[in-house]
Length: 350
View 1 (cartoon, rainbow, N blue to C red):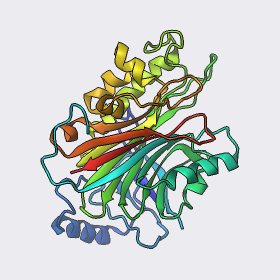
View 2 (view 1 turned 180 degrees about the vertical axis):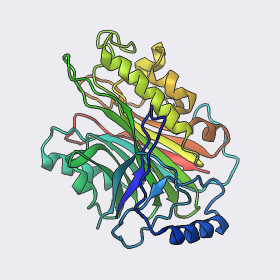
View 3 (view 1 turned 45 degrees about the vertical axis):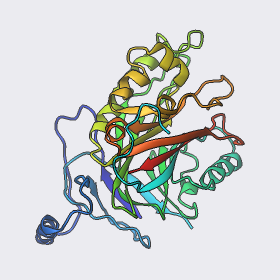
């Protein structure tokens, strides 16, 4: 299925919208039908997705609840063949799901990248994966048996960000790619523009909704000689801005559960030790807590060549406080060709 979704740009004060859907009378009838239809779940937010000439995929449908004019960027959706510091759950457990973050390493061979993808999604107990540097495996992510993947077309190919989920556990609601920061093409560590993927899913068994935010921060933002401190680079300045954008996107999610994944290029242990202004823990900490904060440092680093843990899974702070979600465990997985090791967390949904 190919759908086009609403995509926010940070500083747009005026937004333009072009409708390519059904005729106005049919649209009016559809809207009236939506207004009287019961909500799927108490926490269901207003949809920002608008289907455009979607090719049907068996078992996957999307129905917008409303239309909000925004600049559009397409997303391709395809289906393939004990937490420290949290409040004890006050509701009956709904499910335990696995959420992982994985940087595929765009420069590795196609065979190595494919092997990494298959190794990770073949892991029992894993239900959601946020990918980074996945621009060269976007097509393959659409062919994963038992999984559905949202990718975002970019420059004739795929964006580096993608989110996959186990089709039997979740179904698609909406997705958008939010523009965050401009890239830097000068200096020793250039990087392209960065976005934040925001994908909302519905838990099939309960009807509750989960939003996944996936991000990749610029390189060379943490001082290698002084871990836990920023470098004096434009990269670091842009990274602080992107973290603020992530918080804004998080606050806009509006679903029962919200989690984050990503390569943040900032060591979690050093960040928690020095707590720099504008750092991941202090900034994203306004809305979420990382599994490192909830469960302690993982026994292995996610970036072994430098012995740094720079790949994260974040859990919504409010949901933790009211017992809607709990972090049960985490594991850094090994045996991959990428220079990153994926971080996988077990989360209890209540």
